Image (cartoon, rainbow, N blue to C red; front, top):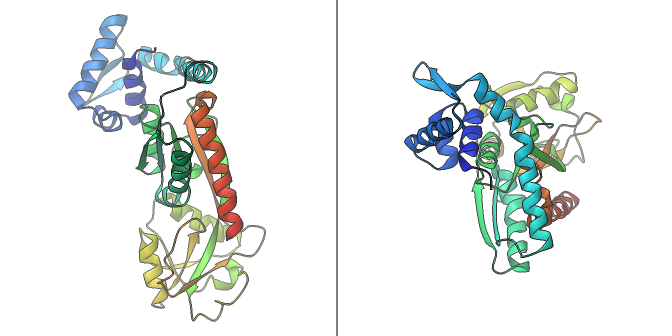
Length: 304
């Protein structure tokens, strides 16, 4: 097995501080520091150094972190081959994802997997995309569902594999009595003058919101800023504006709103992916989970 202190170092490198690494690893900050000191002592190298009140990687620490990517990918593949070729792997699966994915994808897939394997121990963590990647690196998740644009992780990052699950379209959400509520689709240019409800500035969804209008050749007027889909639906049903909402987002039928697809070739969407540690798809349970997620995603979008 790989020395867990190397996982601690890699998590520290990804999170940027001892405190953040401790949160991702579910350790105390003093335990993280002790692991880093122990690894330095055993290797006889200075891996971290003081940086103001915190720590940063040395050049040697960075070379060790970067050079260990292939080692960890190989270890995941070996674990998978052992699980597939001999004794069954421990029936434990740790899943994470953003709120819409947890409700629409992870929950039904978890129920299905538990029915197929009654002894399966399941853990689900709702978390934002960047935290999902940190938890994967810290070996506290086996798989996470994220929107690819919402984390500081490139698709070709050697630490992870990202498997496309679906393109989640964004629909226009309108009051049920709106003049356009009965339309089959709506070009964004036709409703750009409406008072719009959007996420706060600096968030990935805000960036996606404006990118959609830029592609449509128009600029929206943002009247309200929200953090939750339910808040957006409440404002919309009371006639205070309109919004864009992902098709995966579940909006209660109690709200007096309708969702209408966006018309045109530049209709906005979110790219939803399953993220795993590189090499982990060799594990039968992880591969089966990816398969079930693909099936669930196809069923969801086919029904809407």
